[in-house]
Length: 369
Image (cartoon, rainbow, N blue to C red; front, side, top):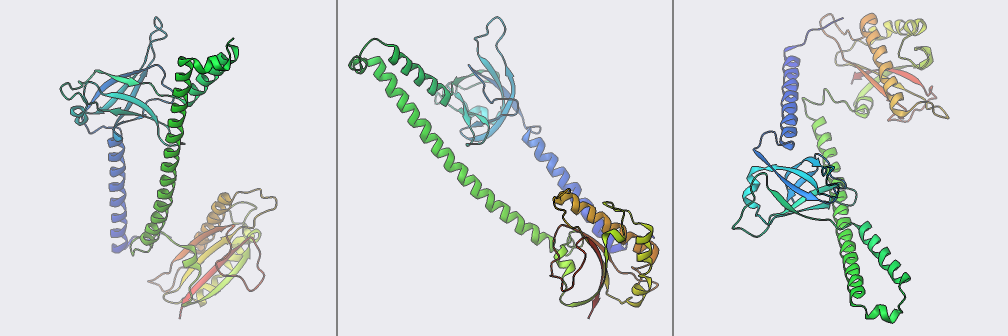
């Protein structure tokens, strides 16, 4: 049985469609902004001996401010295998006046678990500016593995040397190498501590953001226009201000095993409810079909699959009641709502006082007092 939309329903549907189009347009606009489709942009180059972790799309920042991205990584030619690996950096043109000829590019880690970024120090030679297409100076990153290799080489040289410890201590070159190694290691440790602190701050902010989003989502679900489309199962099943009458069927009495297809026996069970629905045709009443699944031990079905199957089973019962039993009919000119709920492995919001099948379908009529 089909129904045409009322004027109010058509207006609400139009608003929802309009909001969806606006949201889609906004998402595409933001994606285009991320790819700098709407801004004037230029390219510059930076050459490094290695480009570990750098690929197309790697963010480019100027003093920490998002300015563009890497659009190409070019290996040295075969004739010069020891040459530089050049990065093509595409940035917004509005940043070019801030870049001096002595600007430098560095490859940094974005947090402990984050990827790489290219950060540009604008330089201080304000008399000469960087032009589009120019090559920018690059500062080679100091990797922890490089320091470890250097330390290993130093220890190997000490072990293989023919001098004594006193001779080593008197060697100015060895002393300088050790002092430099210790200083670089200390700087890396400090950098790691700062990065760890920033990561902790980011995680804490993320938790706060998730809490805020959950509160906003709950508030949105309570809006008059939205709450008809986003339903809370607890609010649907628990109504202290209404009376209810219920019929319960074991899942195997209605459906084929593991499917949302009614058996002949199941359809007959639903047909037998016709007189029950007719006796409770009360203005302001509504019907809820809720299906629960029993978790098997060992479980051969995930919670998400059980939720999906139970939802489909509830919808199958609700559709049959609408089309064949006229359960939603109240008078010749009015009808009542039938809501389908798939509960999966979830427990009922109110503890049952009587033993019921673990895998079951409940048909509930809520009546105004």
